[in-house]
Image (cartoon, rainbow, N blue to C red):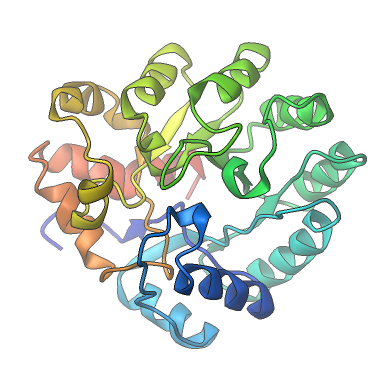
Length: 280
């Protein structure tokens, strides 16, 4: 309210088919290896209509339905579900996903032509190399279309075979105009991913979980990097991970405010950068 914004633009929220979301929650409940064996209570374990009502109550005017396959053969039906969900859900940016498999270029093209506004890629869960040759035509297509891709490619909360800045750096070397949004500020390789954003004008980072008490215990953001974060203020986007949060939604906002980077930076991160990127 103090910032005088029309609302929040949250680029990293999860809406999925119910049976998929329940499996994700069960994985978090079991403190599985992908979340580093960490206890991770889900704060917003609610029915879909309740979650939608809440996110609007929080003042979010635009959000995403981040969903991702963990194996071949999943992406297309997830994309079909997401298109239908966006069609019946005001404020949801039509979200799609992809996986390195034969036919990926075709269904990515179909999604873009059907109005997909953003893609989600999860290198850790999918356990694939983002520079896999199968994905190369799809990355080229998305770069050409200017469609942003939120990608979990950092090594937090647990490293994978293809996480870290090097694999995705190879993708950017081939497709420098690709509009990548690095999830979680690239946690824990914050400095290296800030470096990619400094090198490539279309690389952005989202704030998902960064600076919260939860994340600071596991992978503290080096305060020496704050000036770089401030300088990239036009390419940092609000993300939350709602509803899969181990704390209240507002804590992410408080965590950003207490960085002390100023109201203009906060306005840009919480609304203006996302509104400009998605033409809201």
